[in-house]
Length: 115
Length: 116
Image 1 (cartoon, rainbow over the protein chains, first blue to last red):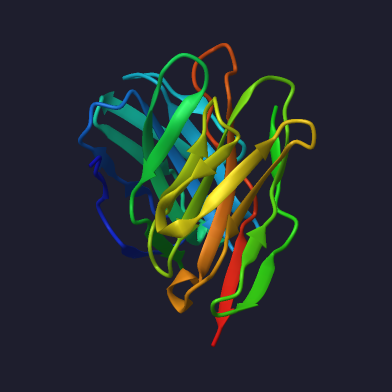
Image 2 (tube, one colour; image 1 turned 60 degrees about the vertical axis):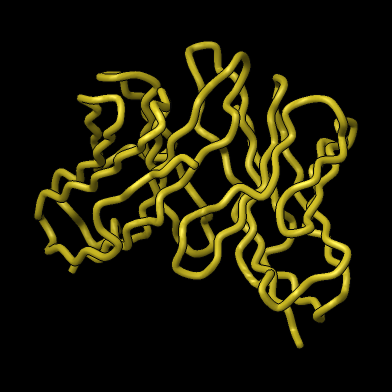
């Protein structure tokens, strides 16, 4: 089975800190994604990447950036953390064949609290 | 762009009763459809997916869903629920953007509550 590993389950950071969330997948998937999950809002796409060094903005990219230097690793960066970025962050990876995407495998999530 | 509407934010059901979780989508192009389940403090796990072919799709844990193109729906069903089915369920859609694979677009989720 595909495994998607997020480096931390829980993080507490201070306002203004630069925060790195790391995600690694082990199945050579070309597509990787970062979502945030908030009660009542569901999952919202922050950024995604369909190739090394490629990145695309999702629905809510403001305040975030990403890095994909290697195919298996996709990092989410909060340049200057703010309290409204307190959330559950979910990484996913998947492959595309033909039209669309054949579903994703998700990591266990990182619950980030910014104080 | 595509969108997904899950009509119920919360569905309470008695144990061993049947359940249906509703999902409607909109898209100007062909789509693939998915249902995911999230147990407390865990990531999302794929329940089932519709890519093509038979409109009735069977997934894990006894769940099934039916794709209805005319009604743009993909409702999830289980004939008899168990206490362990208590979880958040997400419907999702994927459409081809032309510039590469888009991310999945998720509904806001339905919290399934199983009552003993």
